[in-house]
Image 1 (cartoon, rainbow, N blue to C red):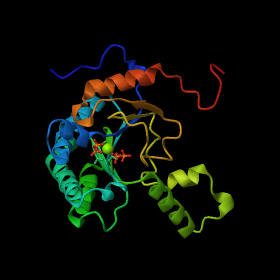
Image 2: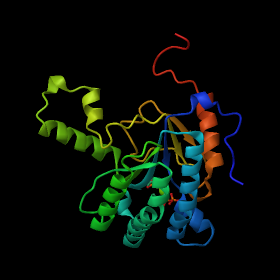
Image 3: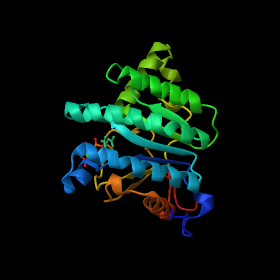
Length: 243
Ligand code: IPE
Ligand code: IPE
Ligand code: MG
């Protein structure tokens, strides 16, 4: 039985945007005497259970870290697996997501390192779901927060915007998804306490929740727990309580 949204979650204070770092696939597999890539494969069930949970919660934005600009450092066969696996997820899942009104997006560098066919499927998936008005589900793929800021600066310079006209809004408008609101909540699995170059600009005032659960074991209940934790936090944005 899928879990229902628990009573301790206040439906009036659901975060608009939750960003996940799906970490711990390799360790999950190693603990079972399996290959690291089996851990990635097992992560798919976690991901789509979280998508279901996000839809039940009524999130407007869900963003997941699927492949970082640093992940190219991994063994060639693991990188190759991840390229093929992400392509296969798109092809197998996009129609269902589309029927459920989910808008799919990709953020990251669409450079020569990403197989052309995968780039094409990403573009097609974005086009297929572009008119949907349900949740926006963004996959960060070949994504790094610093490269994103570098790309924004390059574009700003390229557009000839004078220095005294550049403010935070200018930078934000030149990120990969300018309409994406900053995450309210970032969840990272597997007991690692770092951002690993994820959404550096956007996470400035996000609430961070870390859990020991390895990504392939993560389910919507864990997302609900993270949202409950988020609701226990007090966000001050540099101000003073109650002022
Ligand atoms: C996260 O799991 C998936 C990707 C980075 C693609 P890992 O593969 O990093 O798993 P661990 O951290 O080695 O256990
Ligand atoms: C972050 O996880 C990237 C993704 C989940 C896609 P990593 O496993 O690559 O991060 P580090 O190496 O532990 O910082
Ligand atoms: Mg990892």
